[in-house]
Image (cartoon, rainbow over all chains, first blue to last red):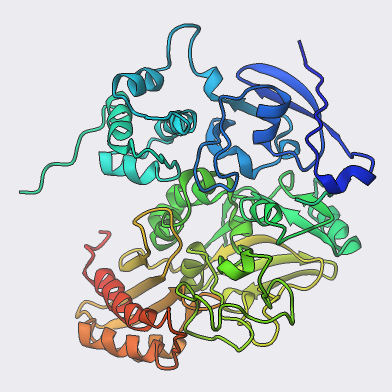
Length: 179
Length: 332
């Protein structure tokens, strides 16, 4: 069922103006959603506040922490730094769309197995980023994982276990120890 | 963020007309810098003109043997394009030295040229800043200026240009293709960005209503001898304190037949020094030659206290980058 949602999430200055909304269709985790949104609504706010898909987290809201990472047309991006209107017609995958029913996505299972979090706030972004990383096909060593996951910050410092979890799923060899 | 209207033209002339009709509008492509600045109330456009439906998202061969990067190609797709990786590895390395994978998947090549400075005072609307509010003063000049410029500064602004990609484009001698109300024109990369002088609010030399449609790479890609060395406060996902794009052509005796040298993180624009390049021409590719070039580049450098360390750092980074470019195994 397509959903029609109007949110009160508008800037204060807009109070005196008729809200200029646009119709946007987003296919999220395989389901088409039709929204009426003001142009200033970020994709992140559309997911969280209009569609109640709160798995995607708002950390810094400035593209610095990666907690809001989702996949748009198969590529990982920061959903806080794009507008919902700009993604009209896009296919979006969020953390809610990765598991197959009760069966966890391999990255989800590996994060659990490796205890790759403490508070868990960055985890949805870390896992969506890892899915994008795998699809990009640029990882040869665990050093590559560290470099190419640098857009996801973990304030609890669970990085060693995050890298272990990702390396296990991607079967990444560790660099040979320096002789 | 202020309220604004939104439109999404599907052709270049329509986009140019839209911006010409509304000087308070802004183009948006990837949005990674503009939306951030709008959230900080540094940018307050009344209208966004979304460029993402324009047919500018391809990389194409040029008749002269160069490549044309459409303005809407993402930074990631550019850095990982097989032609760019093979023929312009300096550009690929510079792009991958910047931002994060998520940002590179969004940010466009055209948009990269329009990144604004990361000067703390430019971002902080509670402080004076001539770039943000002309005539209000420069807070960095006598403030905390560790990340600021050492070359080409003025009394009104010591901000730096933040791009890595643009440093490589300057070194390669790219050309910016522009479409505007008066038709199309080409701008040499060295002339695209400007020094602050007494108008730091202007980052570039575009005229009102103009749109960047493509960036052309010349045939010479310096794929055999190049280096992009970026020095920063953390190893990944940080802006440069100093970066150096170095590219050399060497003959069989190791003599320099062509040299390119451009610095990032030190000026209001990518800092390419033609005199330093000329000085290396015909000289052996040795540390002594590179040290002379480094002295030449920094001859007029001026520190402002917290950033004075950048002068020596830049010299050492230049020498290191040129040595790396020299010593890399030949592509063949």
